[in-house]
Length: 124
Image (cartoon, rainbow, N blue to C red; front, top):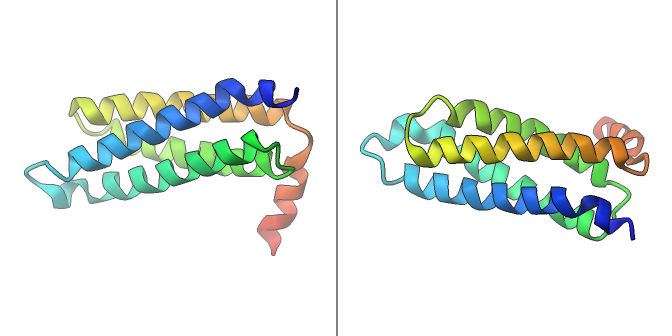
């Protein structure tokens, strides 16, 4: 039953991960790949954390809120970087990242108090 509260966020995480993969692959085809290095690196980081967050939510992990907080932060960084580039794939990625960050933060508010556990994790 609790998984239903995560459904929209899981979907946004998976959509964002796919957009990041597409963006990274497309950036590798750009004329000046070196200029796109930070975008590609953030795309890879973002895709991985989004898939991890979706997995934690799908199994209702007690650490889902902590992972979603990190996911939202990385999505914000990726969106900021992608929005600096005019290519369509970067703009689509930035939009998906912003939506994912927003939904992860909303989910954290509806979570089971795992964010307090996540704070302890950061101290280790």
